[in-house]
Length: 334
Image (cartoon, rainbow, N blue to C red; front, side, top):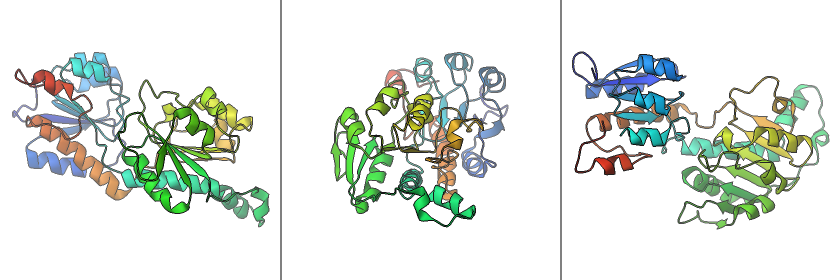
């Protein structure tokens, strides 16, 4: 049976690592939607625990073709955040299930974090901090240190976040290059260039594109070899965009000067990872999105999107909008 015994639609919150669901509860209660939280993440758990769900709000989990086939009541999947790389979009579409994300939250937070990582590497803040705490009061131990003004910053992905990064950097007197084959207009002050030119000319390369089959390992050994040995890589997008093994090797060999990483291919950071021992690397725990305001916005908007679909309305942000075009004039997505 779809929904709860009382006939109300049922939303399940899956794989969420937030400690509370106050915002979701407020939205669902006001809308007459039953809800509960489940720990399911792998295929078997999702199939066992989510069979009566009309809507799934997901942070982590394997939403595969098998899962969509085994959840016949499902009407929508809402992803907490921007990326939907954990969801088989083609399978969802074939089963008539809209996949919705929340791309308009946390833009300022992620852009600020990217710039903060960049500046921390420019000024070697973390190395200076560790050195000072260790009793060494000597700025020249971390040298040489170069001026940021006049440097070239390359931006991979010039959507909401990449554009925000460009605006924030516009006051630093740096040259801005951008690569994005999917935008019609680049942010003011950003010169569009080819990917190869972006790699070759950037002193700082910051990544703000989604993880897709096309962008998986976009920054691989070949790409890193095209960068300057004095260049720095910053990634606040998705870990899978960067080939970790190739990055480690480039840093070891001195083919890259440093990296600021908020996301990794395997999270959390393995305590044995060489990245944790490299002074020229700054790593943060997938924190770029986080502020109390941003987290609250994300949770509320995710629940609101689920409610819209359950009411038969279009969501604001659907990554497979063809499910609605297929249903137009026929039956709505199940």
